[in-house]
Length: 234
Image 1 (cartoon, rainbow, N blue to C red):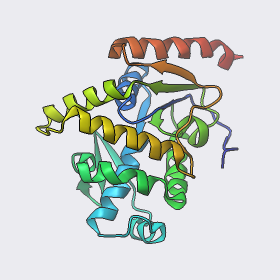
Image 2 (image 1 turned 90 degrees about the horizontal axis):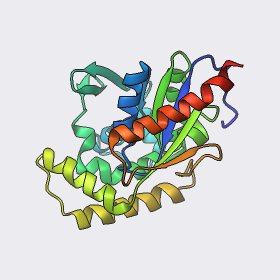
Image 3 (image 1 turned 60 degrees about the horizontal axis):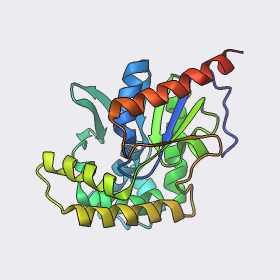
Image 4 (image 1 turned 30 degrees about the vertical axis):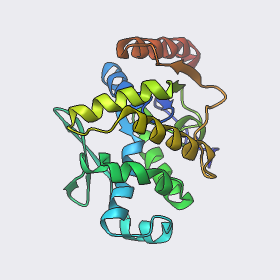
């Protein structure tokens, strides 16, 4: 699986990191600036988790989950407010960000069969276009030959603060202390799972976003891309 190449012709930017490090926000802006396609792999795992919960499937039964999902595509639809996610002709953009999905996505995404299926789909999408992809194992597993690999980090306290703000804007009120505990627990699950655990790729560049603004993070990644361009052109 890690030997994936498929005679890559397009530029691939891989952004990995723990929950609430700002990966999706940065990846969207970066893709827009570069005019690349953006793929939120986390949303794909959330979609599968949502489907399993909706159909009351055992979250540890990958066979049942995959059989129920079949070959139904997880569709990303461009919208004025970003991207909408659809599955089985249903807009699940808001549903996949629910607390229930958030608290269970680590378990579902750790299933080997689910990861293999999502990785296959993600590679197929990346094979035909310049892409910015974010997740937990993009640089290590999904796109091991990505042109630029970024590993974004931030303190648990800062990530809890960001999530608290995001939740408040949605009318969700959970104490920062509770969010910090949930984030720390998610970090542990993601980094200790047997299948494609969260870890920095050997050739990835770490960017600590704790004290950086969004434009500063985007600029830092663009700088890394510019460093790679001469090498790629040879």
